[in-house]
Image 1 (cartoon, rainbow, N blue to C red):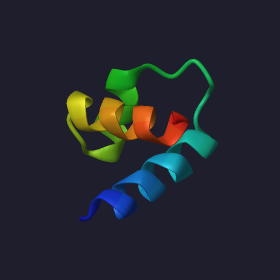
Image 2 (cartoon, rainbow, N blue to C red):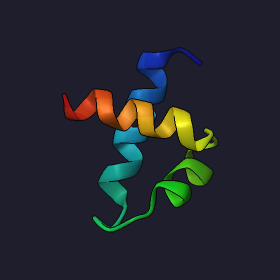
Image 3 (tube, helix red, strand yellow):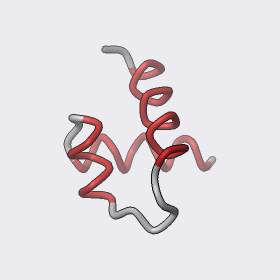
Amino acid sequence: MGTVSKAISLLEMLGRSAPETALADLARRAGFDKATTRRLLVSLIE
């Protein structure tokens, strides 16, 4: 799965998650490690 696909997947998941969802929970549900999840989130924020 490419970076863009991962970011889109994460965005879709964020849309269905509570605002206070922990990074570890997002990573587990997405099937990514925490470092990848954090990197994608930081990129999306910028």
